[in-house]
Length: 133
Ligand code: CMP
Image 1 (tube, protein in one colour):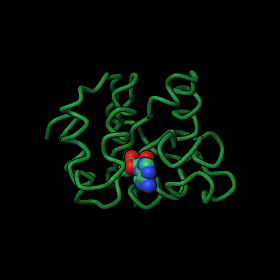
Image 2: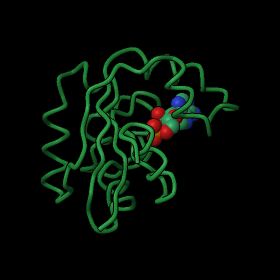
Image 3: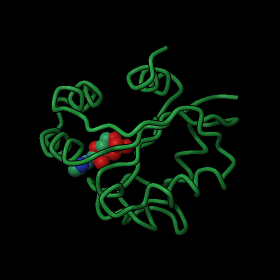
Protein backbone atom coordinates (compact mmCIF):
# COMPACT_ATOMS: atom_id res chain seq x y z
CA UNK A 1 0.00 0.00 0.00
CA UNK A 2 1.12 3.56 -0.68
CA UNK A 3 -0.36 7.00 -0.11
CA UNK A 4 -0.99 10.18 -2.03
CA UNK A 5 -2.36 13.61 -1.11
CA UNK A 6 -5.47 14.83 -2.89
CA UNK A 7 -7.05 18.28 -2.55
CA UNK A 8 -10.53 19.19 -3.72
CA UNK A 9 -10.01 22.80 -4.85
CA UNK A 10 -12.25 25.88 -4.32
CA UNK A 11 -13.85 25.72 -7.79
CA UNK A 12 -15.22 22.29 -6.89
CA UNK A 13 -16.25 22.98 -3.27
CA UNK A 14 -18.07 26.09 -4.55
CA UNK A 15 -20.10 23.92 -6.95
CA UNK A 16 -21.03 21.40 -4.21
CA UNK A 17 -18.91 18.66 -5.80
CA UNK A 18 -17.21 17.28 -2.66
CA UNK A 19 -19.55 14.28 -2.55
CA UNK A 20 -19.23 13.63 -6.27
CA UNK A 21 -15.42 13.66 -6.14
CA UNK A 22 -15.10 11.51 -2.99
CA UNK A 23 -17.55 9.06 -4.58
CA UNK A 24 -15.38 8.82 -7.71
CA UNK A 25 -12.29 8.34 -5.52
CA UNK A 26 -13.88 5.53 -3.50
CA UNK A 27 -15.32 3.85 -6.62
CA UNK A 28 -11.74 3.78 -7.98
CA UNK A 29 -10.80 1.74 -4.86
CA UNK A 30 -8.84 4.41 -2.99
CA UNK A 31 -9.29 4.36 0.78
CA UNK A 32 -9.72 7.84 2.29
CA UNK A 33 -7.59 7.61 5.44
CA UNK A 34 -7.52 11.32 6.40
CA UNK A 35 -9.82 14.18 5.39
CA UNK A 36 -10.46 17.78 6.48
CA UNK A 37 -12.14 20.95 5.23
CA UNK A 38 -9.81 23.94 5.54
CA UNK A 39 -9.64 27.53 4.39
CA UNK A 40 -5.96 28.11 3.61
CA UNK A 41 -4.23 31.35 4.52
CA UNK A 42 -2.00 33.11 1.99
CA UNK A 43 1.05 31.94 3.94
CA UNK A 44 -0.09 28.30 4.02
CA UNK A 45 -0.84 28.26 0.28
CA UNK A 46 2.59 29.73 -0.51
CA UNK A 47 4.25 27.12 1.69
CA UNK A 48 2.30 24.27 0.09
CA UNK A 49 3.17 25.48 -3.42
CA UNK A 50 6.76 26.51 -2.54
CA UNK A 51 8.11 24.54 -5.54
CA UNK A 52 6.14 26.91 -7.79
CA UNK A 53 7.32 30.10 -6.00
CA UNK A 54 9.18 31.37 -9.08
CA UNK A 55 6.43 30.59 -11.60
CA UNK A 56 4.56 33.47 -13.24
CA UNK A 57 1.22 32.02 -12.11
CA UNK A 58 2.08 31.70 -8.39
CA UNK A 59 0.15 34.78 -7.19
CA UNK A 60 -2.98 33.78 -9.14
CA UNK A 61 -2.66 30.21 -7.87
CA UNK A 62 -2.38 31.35 -4.24
CA UNK A 63 -5.32 33.76 -4.66
CA UNK A 64 -7.42 30.95 -6.10
CA UNK A 65 -6.45 28.36 -3.47
CA UNK A 66 -7.33 30.80 -0.66
CA UNK A 67 -10.61 31.94 -2.27
CA UNK A 68 -12.73 29.28 -0.55
CA UNK A 69 -12.61 26.02 1.36
CA UNK A 70 -10.48 23.12 0.16
CA UNK A 71 -10.63 19.45 1.12
CA UNK A 72 -7.24 17.76 1.58
CA UNK A 73 -7.34 13.97 1.82
CA UNK A 74 -4.72 11.27 2.33
CA UNK A 75 -5.56 8.37 0.02
CA UNK A 76 -4.29 4.82 0.28
CA UNK A 77 -4.02 2.27 -2.51
CA UNK A 78 -1.37 0.22 -4.24
CA UNK A 79 0.47 2.56 -6.63
CA UNK A 80 -1.52 5.48 -5.16
CA UNK A 81 0.40 8.41 -6.69
CA UNK A 82 0.32 7.18 -10.28
CA UNK A 83 -3.19 5.72 -10.13
CA UNK A 84 -4.60 8.95 -8.69
CA UNK A 85 -2.94 11.02 -11.40
CA UNK A 86 -4.51 8.70 -13.95
CA UNK A 87 -7.93 9.16 -12.29
CA UNK A 88 -7.74 12.98 -12.32
CA UNK A 89 -6.14 13.45 -15.76
CA UNK A 90 -3.81 16.11 -17.17
CA UNK A 91 -3.27 19.44 -15.34
CA UNK A 92 -5.06 21.32 -18.10
CA UNK A 93 -8.62 19.94 -18.36
CA UNK A 94 -8.49 20.65 -22.12
CA UNK A 95 -5.83 17.94 -22.39
CA UNK A 96 -7.31 15.54 -19.81
CA UNK A 97 -8.32 12.10 -21.03
CA UNK A 98 -12.00 11.38 -21.50
CA UNK A 99 -13.65 10.20 -18.29
CA UNK A 100 -11.04 11.66 -15.91
CA UNK A 101 -12.18 13.95 -13.09
CA UNK A 102 -10.55 17.05 -14.58
CA UNK A 103 -12.04 16.23 -17.99
CA UNK A 104 -15.44 15.95 -16.35
CA UNK A 105 -15.49 18.98 -14.05
CA UNK A 106 -12.27 21.01 -14.45
CA UNK A 107 -12.75 24.53 -15.83
CA UNK A 108 -9.23 25.55 -16.87
CA UNK A 109 -5.56 24.99 -15.98
CA UNK A 110 -5.93 26.93 -12.72
CA UNK A 111 -9.46 25.91 -11.72
CA UNK A 112 -8.79 22.23 -12.35
CA UNK A 113 -10.85 20.97 -9.38
CA UNK A 114 -8.36 18.54 -7.85
CA UNK A 115 -4.70 18.29 -6.88
CA UNK A 116 -2.72 15.06 -6.73
CA UNK A 117 0.86 14.56 -5.53
CA UNK A 118 3.35 13.98 -8.35
CA UNK A 119 5.77 11.59 -6.56
CA UNK A 120 5.96 9.41 -3.45
CA UNK A 121 8.41 11.89 -1.94
CA UNK A 122 6.08 14.85 -2.46
CA UNK A 123 3.11 12.79 -1.27
CA UNK A 124 4.84 12.22 2.08
CA UNK A 125 5.69 15.93 2.37
CA UNK A 126 2.19 17.05 1.39
CA UNK A 127 0.41 14.59 3.70
CA UNK A 128 2.62 15.78 6.58
CA UNK A 129 1.76 19.39 5.68
CA UNK A 130 -1.95 18.80 6.34
CA UNK A 131 -2.02 15.85 8.74
CA UNK A 132 1.37 15.63 10.47
CA UNK A 133 3.67 12.62 10.32
P1 CMP B 1 -1.72 21.33 -9.05
O1 CMP B 1 -1.71 19.87 -9.36
O2 CMP B 1 -2.46 21.74 -7.83
O3 CMP B 1 -0.21 21.85 -8.94
C1 CMP B 1 0.17 23.17 -9.25
C2 CMP B 1 -0.96 23.94 -9.86
O4 CMP B 1 -0.58 25.09 -10.55
C3 CMP B 1 -1.64 23.09 -10.90
O5 CMP B 1 -2.37 22.08 -10.28
C4 CMP B 1 -2.45 24.11 -11.65
O6 CMP B 1 -3.71 24.34 -11.06
C5 CMP B 1 -1.58 25.35 -11.49
N1 CMP B 1 -0.95 25.65 -12.75
C6 CMP B 1 -0.02 24.94 -13.41
N2 CMP B 1 0.35 25.55 -14.55
C7 CMP B 1 -0.36 26.70 -14.60
C8 CMP B 1 -0.42 27.76 -15.53
N3 CMP B 1 0.33 27.77 -16.63
N4 CMP B 1 -1.28 28.78 -15.26
C9 CMP B 1 -2.03 28.76 -14.13
N5 CMP B 1 -2.01 27.78 -13.21
C10 CMP B 1 -1.19 26.75 -13.45
